[in-house]
Length: 72
Image (cartoon, rainbow, N blue to C red):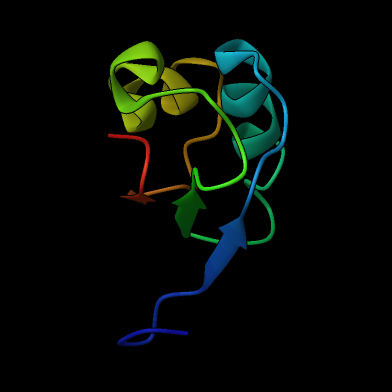
């Protein structure tokens, strides 16, 4: 929890950007924020695009923030 907001850390190993978005969306009931650690995947920030917009676009409206680590 950071400043009263529940965060979940997700470190994907898949090389499929759409699967990463889907997995984040499934965390909708668990957390309001996601720390996305891209150190174990070759997927880049550019391939993911606007993660928060994409996640909310599939109905994960509880997620308010996505912090991305790595993935130059």
